[in-house]
Image (tube, rainbow, N blue to C red; front, side, top):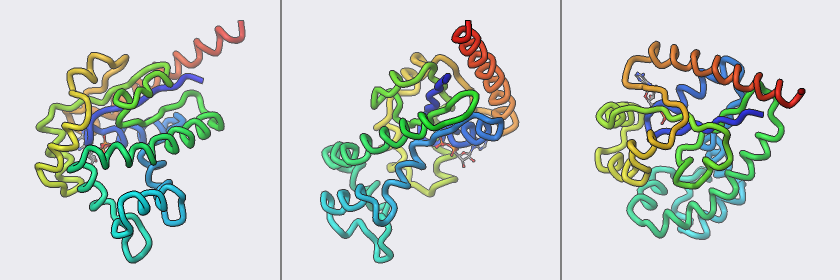
Length: 205
Ligand code: ADP
């Protein structure tokens, strides 16, 4: 199956594109969604996070205090590495399990840290959603209420916009409005359907 890796900085529009491609029939697997599932109450990863960073990261209702965890890992590089050690292997296993079970014309793996975690090696093409940093900050702050310095730290923890663009096979420009983005999603979807069809033809012959 043709496998696309969809990446971009925080707030660039990955989820918006992923939803648009899924609506057209792409098989979308979102690693942020998997990360949330893996840290639900009762999941082994949540127990490991509590054992590693302290039970006060678990709220009284048994759920992970995501704001506290984010504050911790973005102020302490070592804590971030340890958290990634708990989550990343599990996320990758579950993603590959779902990919193997997928029935769709092509797959889209949504991986925010695609290059940072070397997972570009798992995909046939890398699709980058790109926005200028000012637009990115404005959208993130509108969506999440993160402070300016929290956004700074998250952006600093990801590869630069320039490097991401250099390493992309395909780029969607999300500096415009939503209809402009959806029109690009439609075009790229058609090109992936064609690519997937060509790959299948070659296999049959
Ligand atoms: P990501 O998944 O990369 O973090 P999202 O798809 O969640 O980014 O987009 C970030 C925020 O910006 C969301 O609130 C989304 O609705 C909004 N957004 C995305 N694209 C546009 C656009 N072209 N115009 C206006 N708002 C947008």
